[in-house]
Image (tube, rainbow, N blue to C red):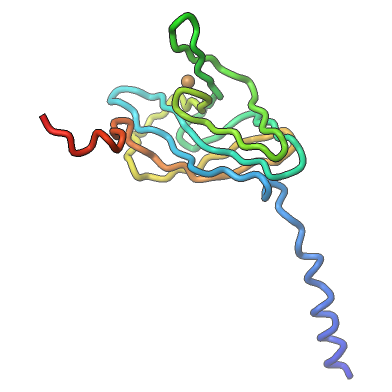
Length: 155
Ligand SMILES: [Cu+2]
């Protein structure tokens, strides 16, 4: 009889342990940063963020162990010129996906004092107003990597 009671207690508790992580519904994929030309200390990061929750998430900042100053930027065509301008926050509406990509939204990382080698992986974090902070791994990709079509071309 005593044994049975213990079993009942064991099976009764698991539901309590299932508190969902606050950011489980917000996912970052395809995150990468670029290597820097020699002598430079600034680079750009790109990623895809999908908000599968039912509330809007506003990205208010980013963090990286490589950099003490990160900014959201976007590219704009102004009178035939490509310009970057900082944006304070980036909103990812409920159920939507926002892509940070070359020529568009990106994360600038300033004051990097280490060399970045292609293939390395670095930890980054996005800070949001109400969706918690989202940690992800960003892969270092070569700035000089050529598009696939260019490979195999010879002079
Ligand atoms: Cu920029």
